Image (tube, rainbow, N blue to C red; front, side):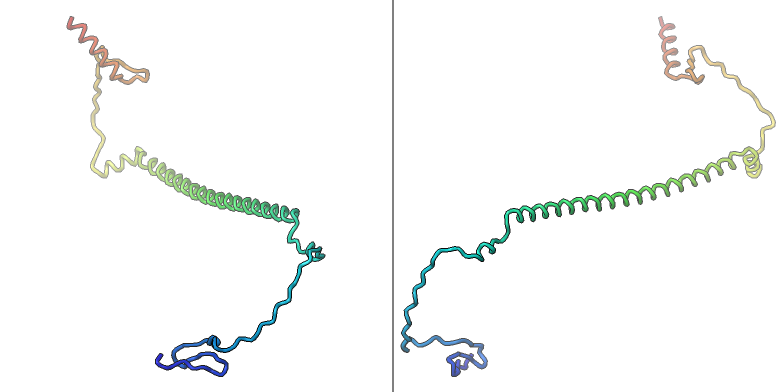
Length: 178
């Protein structure tokens, strides 16, 4: 920026390296030319035929535009709901198909377990496995008969009712202690 700004023949200031550009202001010492007085204009109010055509939109057109926008917004909302319901339906169908596959796999596994149970619970297969393990049937059998005390109570199914039996024992113990 050590270089001074130079003026060209039009009065513009410029510099070769400093980045100074522009137009200089006129000197105040120079005499300004005389200005001519301006003519006065008067405005006469009246009707302009093109002013009637210059009205932007009528109120009916504005209402129609608002109605069209409302209808478009309602249509967009309805379309959005339809897309949401379609997506939800597809997801539900996929979940249903997945559950159906799991049910089929569980049924197949249950069928395999039933077959294995039938094979393993067969008396002849049990006897064969017991013989391989060195087991045999007993040579003699004995029968034991258990007599139930009078205080033992049975339920409707024929098995021993513990609570009724305890009450009976308690009542008999209270009766014998008197």
